[in-house]
Length: 130
Image 1 (cartoon, rainbow, N blue to C red):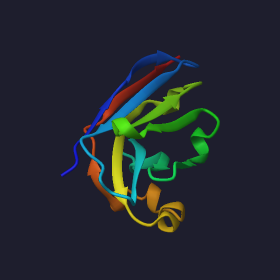
Image 2: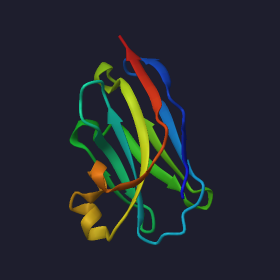
Image 3: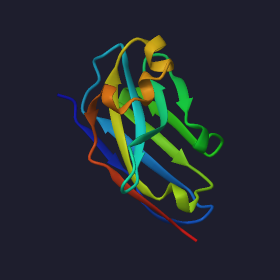
């Protein structure tokens, strides 16, 4: 059982920045990836960024390209989501998630599929005000 703990959410004004942190209790898997999802009330959970841990390849949703950056500190089992130029529509709960699978599957959409996630964090709230 892997436990994921998020931190770093909060309230900022439009154009501001936040950095979310996701720390895993362990990661002994060679085929693991970590994705950040968000879910607004009444909407489906959507992935915004993902990183394939062993090789460091990255994926971004079009809505956050150029504004969000996902990165990792492998020795610390930690993944970050740097969010810049935040907009009101970025306001919602953000969840860290871990899944497993071959990189070709991750790259082909698996990394953004909520139903492929094995472990979820508890979520952290991000609020962007104008």
